[in-house]
Length: 239
Image 1: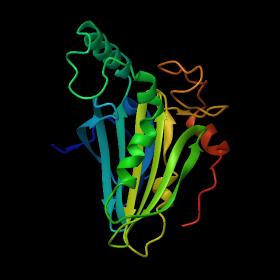
Image 2: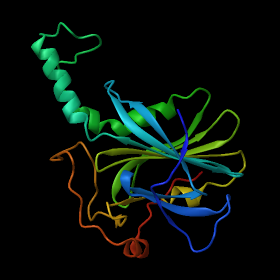
Image 3: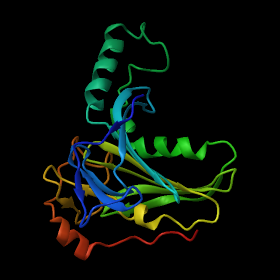
């Protein structure tokens, strides 16, 4: 897959930046902002879901002498139509066209509800890793999963997984053995609307459960400045 420079982002910086300087990158197309060491590159990907659907996504990557950093965004907004069509096709054929599993059953809700855990499983099943933390948490009231791993070479990987506005986010950093936790990268993630303004919810935001509908309506957004002034950071587990 071809790597190309990220050209449709807003960069927030107060002075000219060198390749190793950290900056805040806001990507309105994918609904997030994050801190990276320099301008990230973007790679288009195809992501396979738990129920074998192929979804479009993008990976934003950057690195410095202290680690490697990436934010993967997968677009789940079309999965209801895809599940509806697959189920209807199977039912019309009375199940005769099934190649793997019960595709006559419409698993749309389970697909969305389990998206974060499906993404987490890819990390937990890596060879030779030691899981030092796995649990639920939230960021700006958007629920998520938090994972910390020790890799076979003693490097450390920190992962935050979220769903917001029909997208799956995998925010990942790996640092060499003995290096500190990449706090600047981890705590730089936030959700933004189409104008680049930050969003924070009054109650816990979770997709796929209870009376949730697709897409979930958003709460009135705060400005980026207001969010930064009042932002609550959930406690992080010890390393």
